[in-house]
Length: 612
Image 1 (spheres, rainbow, N blue to C red):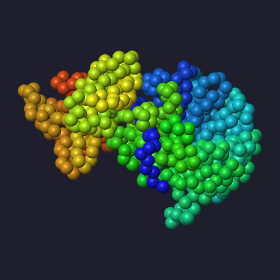
Image 2: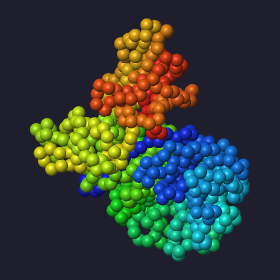
Image 3: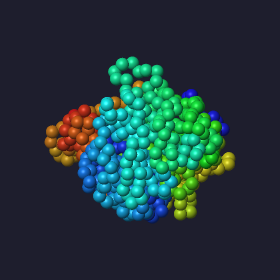
Image 4: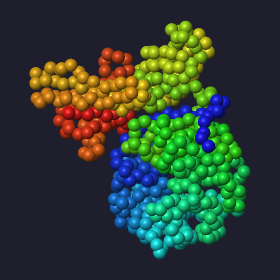
């Protein structure tokens, strides 16, 4: 079914903050949320390229700068992958990470301060085709987290589910739980008590290796292995035949009958309701209108008491599609936790309450950044969340330009009487300067001095006041872009190129993009010999920076480079407007550059320019 929200159903609203990764994420496969430094605040870690980035939480949904390291010890190398698994495996009270490679499975022991010790090899699991997934659960009821490892092999060896039983001291005993049928590869596993006997069971999804021929009617299965309570399992039961390739599986009780249900991610998200005996029946699937890479987060997004789904979606607006549960195994569209529309797809996401307000939030890989998406509550009663006027990111900074979109309950004749007040987290209320007011949109400056944290924004006219919540950060870097009727928000900056001739006098600025009704295109920037050429970007949300602003330039054939801008701060003539000047005199002539601002560890939207 294609989901559309009903008018009376609440939808979740999210703010977003983007954090820059220290390592590239071309090989990222692991994302976990846990308290790594035992301060009571949730942190997160991501396997990023050849290293691991750890962000320590402040308890309010914000995070410190990434601490990055390359794991070492026990034969760990650049091909080692971090699994999306975290637990205290060695019983010392600290959260540990799990790594795997062609050599085996490793534990990366946490030290309890946000750092990790040398890796320990816990089992050698040689395989010939790949290790599909690692999951953790207490399989034998001894209070120690065990591991389930899905291993794929080339014939004649069979793919299998291997169980690593925790001995309670960080060492493990390995055995094969069961083999899968010939020509089937393991893809993912969910662990839950599917037959309600008090013992964890396994539900595995597989794909059938049919070579280069036409896909058969059945392209995979869901196999269920019923647990025996000692870490062993029954032979796999083919519980479901699949007509689409699925790449992720998770379990939760979506219809409140006490039996775990399944959600499988693929072109369509498939829902299967548990019968309580290890078998399942099909429920209406979820079609977002396109492919769904990555994983699924399960949470009660709207505080309805019903578990819902968060699904990575490439459909505009790109982000995490929020599906709220109806409590009967069906779902409705409850909004999108949106990403930068010009970012590169990621796929990893995880959910937890990051700021202690009782609402589930999200951490998601979003191209070359990590997006933290804080759940602002539901609408109604929450009416709006102000966004940066430059990028649309739903966080704002003091003395930055913001936009509020909402169907305000006033008419055109009332517009001159509209006022906006911002009451910050310190209890101080300030009037906002307004630039534009209409019945559906207000452009304003967030008052200078607004304290970071949640702020209540109240819009008043001659009618009843309307309130929303703003998420205020010290900086929220955002670059203004050219707009067009066809493309909406663009990747070309609303910027000028300024040339200083040999006499050091500025020449007439030229726009770096040209827009028509059918879209925008880059205008190659000339760079005359003997001159210096600067790119003048207009931005907002950067003037309060503590550390120097960094300009990151990425080019497909040359990789990335970081340069210091000639100037980064308030523009000086217009309230809330910032400016960044970047010298581009000596850049090589290449097809195009992607530019991102890195401000105190947060990153802006990406923009593109071309030089001659």
